[in-house]
Length: 209
Picture 1: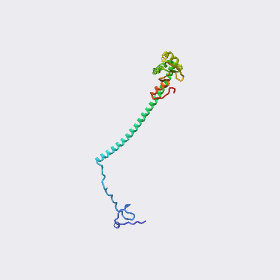
Picture 2: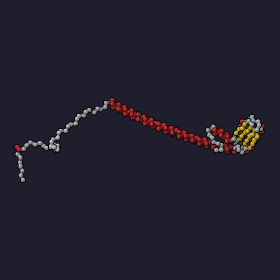
Picture 3: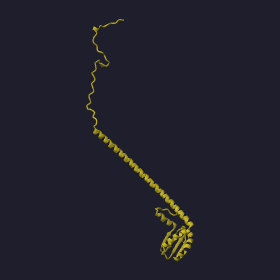
Picture 4: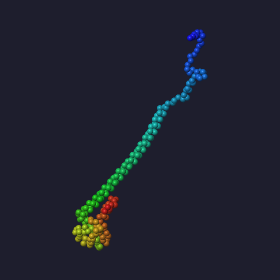
């Protein structure tokens, strides 16, 4: 094995080789061009502009919140009206039911009272007779057969003086009467008197219903 020593005076100057110093053609690439400076500088908003932006955002938020509040308020109003209407309907329904119950109780109490105390027919007969107090002929008093005895016993003399004739009529319920004369007629049956009472209450419940 042999080696050759090159004297220093025979060596030439050299430049250190670096990776990427040459392109594929063997030529050294041109130095990179620095980026151009920005055409305009970034302009920051002024204090007045920031305040205007803040005011605009506040107004937009306020209007949105106001609209939302108005929508919710309208919903609450409708809910309140619906609730009030429901309460009124319930109260009306309960009132009607209570009135119906009261009328039914009143009819039952009156029937029982007349059965226990038939004398309750006397004020009814007197009022009917006084309505035709000027009657002089064809005077007829129609009564339920169960009431003939009590009316004759208490009002017989008065009826004879005025010329009233009593007729038992099974179509007339006990506790009522009907008077007829040449001057007119008075219907004082229970059904008619009852209808007069409930008509003032805006009802149309019959006595037998």
